[in-house]
Length: 469
Ligand code: AMP
Ligand code: GLY
Image (cartoon, rainbow, N blue to C red; front, side, top):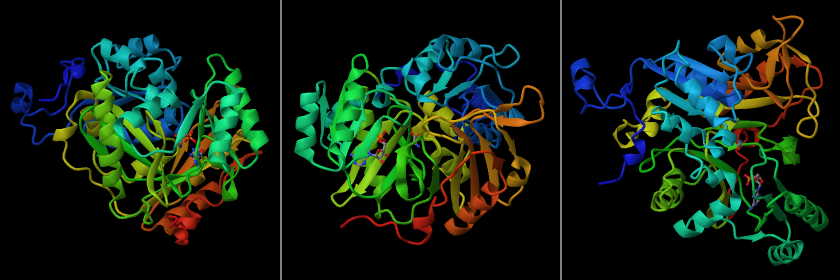
């Protein structure tokens, strides 16, 4: 029997249709996976959280959603509460009273920083179910060196790497692997800690910057060729349920030029991946990692984001994240037909194995990020955004907000707060249709100085994404 004792935080409030419970029998619930009357608190303020809030609101089992801190767009869909989203104690306190003084049935933590800070532990300690790993398990994202260690123990295919603490070690590792050089900050860096370059001097300079930070360590890796895939694996610490694979566009400019960002766009599904790839990732990556984490006494529940390269030698893990990816989530959830609340609650309470198979809508979804002028180096803020309603009226389109707020002097006006501002997401019967709709909507947005990539999903639509070899 598997140990599910780490779900002891699951409370009386649990509305998961656990057929064994007398309450469930009394209510006549049919089938595991059904939830009713669930109140969910979502932590975060990005377009990812906006998509999660909207996904939860379409689940008939969810009655109430509150988001903290949210943004101007989320506030149009759900009540928002001001909070320091990096403070675990504040999150746990809010979870205990977010619904007119009543506790949440489920807390969903969007970003990585609160997870690494122990927000999920704090919520569970308050007796409330939480979607997301505890601080120790979140180290899979919090430290690239830790992730490499777990992958080695679990025999997960990944890039060869050296963890370096001095420039001499860096220099030797760069020479061993040759160009292109891959240099990664060990700690969290909002997607901007990685430099991939043919220029040895640039690689060394980035490594020097990483080492200069307190406790600085830097990871030097072999370069992985081949297209990248993001696969979200929902887990309760034992079972794993994969979502649809997606592709993210990390570089700021068309043609994958310019610096890395948090992600400038995404699409799903991927028709170019090798047959059986998702099952292979579950069997060779997600399950071994989940088992290894349980074996270490730090079970991982929540979302294991597997970032992969599909290389000429097969799949190789590039990175793990401990939460939904942004902007892939906006595209992936657009196609999810099954109840999101039931899925996340099953993960949080250890019932994933009893959940019915997920149902997906046909067609495709494309997300295009509109970023503030100057992003990622020095994003500007305060510019008014117009065209939001018109963009949202394009068929199949949802406008998810990220860096938005209300203008101080004119409450009706929405202004950008910098970074990634909007994530325009469109569904379509085909990838081409979804892409056309997304760009039709993007062109209706006016935001001074803003920029977006014009080639999101283009190669896939043209059938030009190929796996080397
Ligand atoms: P990470 O933060 O580890 O996901 O890295 C950010 C981005 O850098 C990835 O999405 C890749 O585009 C690129 N990258 C990271 N590691 C490698 C690697 N070993 N080979 C090639 N590209 C990489
Ligand atoms: N889109 C990449 C990430 O969420 O880290």
